[in-house]
Length: 151
Image: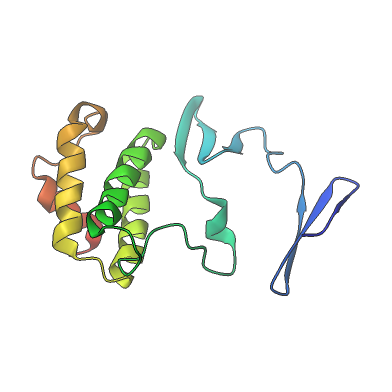
């Protein structure tokens, strides 16, 4: 890691360099705070998931592989936990669906079974139904999962 000089940070990873302003939130109607993007739209605050690693030109391993030494049940429950986290961070259902679909793509590429992921999706919706009802959601959580998964 490189040092800082005059308000600019330098990140060096495997030959990749990026110079960034140390003050990332210079916009008066938008800010990224921890794992949340906050915007003021038409006088209302809206939030959605923010992950700085999404902008890196390399893959960041932040989710378990099924081949790891973790119990497979724990691997699938990570999806459950992330769904609850996304629901709490997203003001709009569309942002939740986008982020859940992005995560599904990663997990499918790692060999996770859609049926088991769908079961975790339905469990998360069932357990936190009151929170999910801040949006108009489909009655059939399985159909909603298939929609998000692009099936």
